[in-house]
Structure formats: structure tokens, C-alpha cells
Length: 100
Length: 282
Image 1 (cartoon, rainbow over the protein chains, first blue to last red):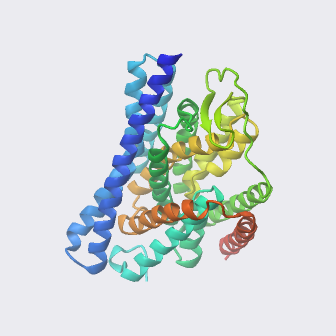
Image 2 (cartoon, rainbow over the protein chains, first blue to last red):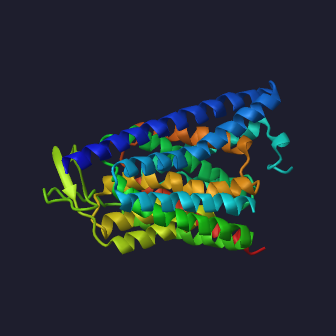
């Protein structure tokens, strides 16, 4: 029970770090890109920053699901490996639905 | 003027979207809702955006809010990771189906659906006007899905068990669908169900829902993005605005009485619903 709790605690911390990194990176890119777009300074670079910021924003939640899959595999908690894989599969379905 | 053409993005429009995001984010935090329920009607009814692009922009803000809030809370055990991951399987499948449906149905159908949901949210807000947090302070074994966390008000560790999992899964599936279709997080559907019927303390239910809405909104946002409905130039000011708004709102909401704010918001949501219905019948 204790081992399980500490594994969950570790996963929660890792998830927090992934999400913090994604949030800070995308928000920074948005802020700089937007400022550049509004004042009209190097519009191509601004577009690039905004586009990259959006992709990072969209990639952040799936990244923390991937981290969870790996952690549950290490713990051999197969129920949760399956559940988190279902989430990834549904997200992959969204990518298919977006581009087919 | 076509507001969706990035070349038309003036400083003014960016500032307006940023401001709308700030207000929506602050209200959302103060009421325990997401900002989407206010941002989407503003973008469609005031700025004239199609509901699909308003929903797409709003989903981007939902992802940002979820990531920021969860990053901040991680480690204090309020988030029930196991419940979150079980229910996410249902919300993401729901958001995939909702995202596909949004591409197939007419704008007027989406507007009417938004009207219905806005009325429902108003009812939930009114129902909670005088409600306080229900906290189980027993020290029972939390079981497979339950949890325990340190609760300041009771000054100790409280634990809870999770009941009626099929109901929670069903509510999550519906929430995922509605999230993609309308650009809201879906916490408004999940949190009351998890709290009232599934035995989760309100704060744990809200924290777990906040974790889930990020991945749920991503399912829908990816579809809008691929279909060209999610423009970075419009999403960026909304995301930044909501972040600033939630930050400010969290500080303002401390100690403030939100009873009148709730009544005001319920009235506003009813007006939004009426306007959405009027728009859907040209």
C-alpha cells in the first residue's frame, strides 16, 4: 500500500512537471508572438511562434498521458496501462478525424 | 470583415479577445466553472465568430487552464489520479465523437444545444447558491479508487470512497461530447455528479475534473485544428487572457461572497441561452 502510494505521488509530481513545462513554454511563445504580431515586427517569425505555441499547448496533455502509461508499465499496473492506452487511442482517433 | 482571416487581426481585436478571456477566466474561477461557458457566447454573439471557431478557441483556453491549475496542485493529493485516468477513458472517447459530430451538424443545431446547456448550467449554479462543501471526515479504507488528502478546514487528513463508477463513466462520456461540441471543459457536468452521487468531496472532484478537462479538450481541439477552425492568432490572446483572469480571479475570490455573483451569472446564462435560440432561428 505504501509503495503504491509513493509511486502515485511520484507520478503526480512528474505529471505536474510536464504540465508546468508545457504551460510556461506555450504561454511564453504566445506572449512574444502576439506582441510581435500586434506591433507588426517580423510577422513571419510571429506566426511561427504562435503556431509552435499552439502545437505545444495541444501536445502537453497527451504528453502527460504518455508519461502515465510508462509509469504504470513500470509498476506493472496493467489495468491502468490499458485505461491510459485507451485515452491515447482516442486522441489518435482525433488526429485521424482531423486529417482524413 | 471576416474576423477569421489572420490578416485582419488588428491590435484592437487581439486586445478585445484578451480582455474577454480575462473576464471569462476570472468569472470561471470565482464560480468554480471553466471560462468557456462565458467566452464562447462572447465570441459568437458579440464578435460574430461562427460557433465552431469560438468553441475551438475556447478549447485552447480549457487546455491551458487545466495544465496550469494541475501543475500548481500536483503533489498535494487533492487530485485523484486513478479516478481521473479511469474517467478520462470515457471523456476522450466522448470528445472524439463530439468533435466528429461538430463537423457534421449545422451551426443552428450547435447554437440550440449551447442554449440548452447554458440553461442547465444556470440551474446547477442556482442549485448551489447556498451549498457548502460536503466533506467526509471518516478514516475508512478508501478502497481501489478512493483517496485521502489533507483538508485545511477540518485540520486533518480526510478520506473517501468512490461509489457508482458506471454513473461517473456515463457522465464523463456525456461531458466529453459536450466539451468538443461547445468548447467548454465539461466540469459543470462531471463535478456535481462526482460530488453528489459518487462520494467525492467537492474539492477533490473539482481538482480531478480540472486534470481531466485538459486531455478531453485536446481530443476536440485537435479535430478543429486539423480542420482549420483553430487559428493561433485568435487562440493566443484568449489563452493568455484566461490565464491572467484565473490568476486574478483566484485571488479575488478568497473571502468574497459569491452568492450575488452566482445569481447574476445564472441570469446572464439565461440571457445567453435566449440569444443563442434567437440566433438559431433566422
